[in-house]
Image (cartoon, rainbow, N blue to C red; front, side, top):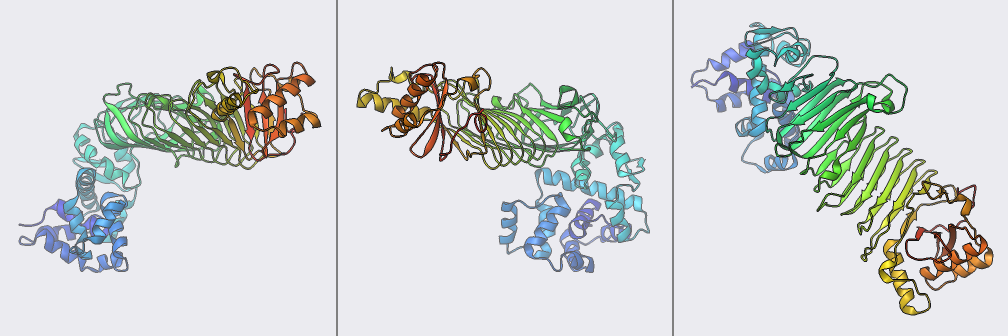
Length: 571
């Protein structure tokens, strides 16, 4: 039985990375007694195959085959499998991959073979292998699919989907077209029945709904999406979703605002719209990236485990992630991103947020699980919150740049020790004590009693459980105690030498803090903030009266022993 046109096209794609020329296709499909194995073996002996694969290692051959057939690199487990399958020779690998393709790979390969057949027919009976290859890879080559002629690949993508006779072709070929370096675009002002409709417009305007029809993996591309576009993704039970493409940069030289926003959201129907992994690769088509951002609201995606926007350079506004208890990692790209991160979902797992370069604005609140923020380079604005009575760990690494870090560590009655840790990093940073600035709560051990060992031990236990620690503070950094409702600058009281020596010579941190607060209020009755050194660190104490205790604040500048001087590094 002769090999079919589809089988022949698949072998051409695998071995040569192109469709068949008409002469070759006619020859091989007319060999009545040739099997697909025999045709494959003949391909492996051809000079064209040798020119592509002759000098490649087995691993390189495998990777090239995956690219030719499926438009992707081989996963580690796939690569290892074929490397160790010594019973399959290098010359037989292509046929083995064609025969073994399943799932999305099978859909892509079959669709790619359909598309290759249309290219062969368009190129004509006398076309050479080189001509067919150029036709296949050129975006401006006319092609024929079904009964319709398209002036170019772009024209095909602009028209198909609206033309009912082409619907079956396009549904199957969508992924194959993406492999031709042509992303699949969302349709403007329409619901995409198959979730992968194309449009040839230069921009999307208005609202767009894309239905992925219960696909397990999907990709959507945005083609220069304009201001105020609202893109809703729905109808998927997916392991992964990738969103790529371009958003149009705002021409107005203004700050980020809602009028300059493209919103990417998800159907409120959580029963039919879920993703585990969301990948964002969004760019801006202009230089005014800071004036334009893409809103990404993942509210309702309760099965989300990771958001990877490391490939995005557009500015992102990421919200709604507190609704997912399984969300463990969020990675942002090089744009000027804004993110609100929280572990407030019931049963939340520990979450890590990594931001890239750019001026990022980060609000992080630890509630039911630990939260770590690793900010990248850039002059970032970070607000770190510990939810009231939370025993979760909160860690912020501000990274390089002149960062502003505001700490609102709320009152905690939790008996379990937890961490509020801030690392400022390189640059001239400002550490601001927020409206609820760095408060501790020793109410769970009663009134502090420093007259006996038990009271001292209890006070130190509570302090250590609620202490805010800051590393990398230097004399060039600034401690700002005027944020929110604190208005502490006018009431800061520096200790004199004797008072400072008394605090630093105390036996325990609780006694040192109590001594410093009492002395500061002796110096100035309305004193609210003072600083002292103890155990090789500088501490900043916040107290409403002359007695250090419940609801008062203590922040440790770990390893810093320099002075805090009002008007320079203290404001």
